[in-house]
Length: 56
Image 1 (cartoon, rainbow, N blue to C red):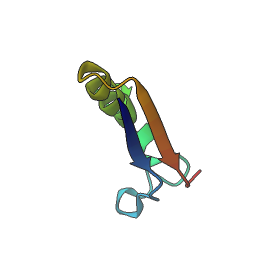
Image 2 (tube, helix red, strand yellow; image 1 turned 90 degrees about the horizontal axis):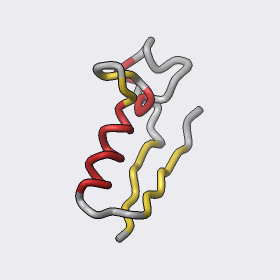
Image 3 (cartoon, rainbow, N blue to C red; image 1 turned 120 degrees about the horizontal axis):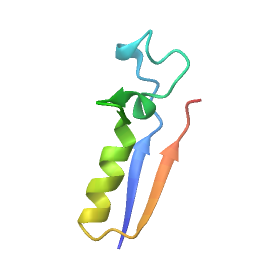
Image 4 (cartoon, rainbow, N blue to C red; image 1 turned 120 degrees about the vertical axis):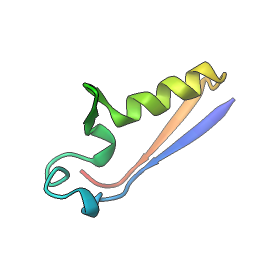
């Protein structure tokens, strides 16, 4: 099964944290936010993940 993670936004509401780092890479409890999404998808049987990026 396939899934897509949309990670192309600027994260303007999180500035200045997102000035040099995409919001999906911001650490939450010492792990990047996107890692939580990938782990959840894997646990639910997703074996192909596409990450749509556009910022940084």
